[in-house]
Length: 250
Image (cartoon, rainbow, N blue to C red):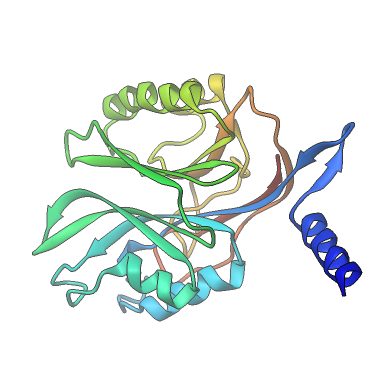
């Protein structure tokens, strides 16, 4: 019986990590980012079950969500992050950017692993206040944000992003709707310190006929990350953005 228990523990350890490069542990991680428009599709139908089905089908370990309502009237007073978390059997964390329609509006993170710590940062937003959500897990840190429509605000937000990257004591990944293309001043400046993990040439918006890319998952250039798979998920109706997905080894 003792031998059987040892075998099971060994198999579990192998499933969690692979040891290469002289015994250094490496971990596979599936990351997703999705501007869900608070569940309102391009058919103008608000359907959170449909949104949850898109997330479940991708099977991410963690997902950054943007345009999330929290008990607003337009979402029938539903806590959208909590609802999606229940439907996806994931923990939910929400960060409010603004008061809106009797409730709140901002970004969220869903994760299969329970967060160890959560931090929220205000970002510049001259047309609308913005927020950045930082969730720490055992082996990595994941960040969700939805940047300003204003170029000056986005560039100012880079200071916060770079500071977080430099202060991180474990691998860190940033995800979200950046509202900027790779060839913009913001995109060019970002690429000096960050590596794109998702395909920055594959368009994400609008969902029914994507013509531009404004959604990304990135990591610091100093961070050793191997991309195993990446895609823009073919979902043309559930939101006005297409979800992005990447599987990495770090």
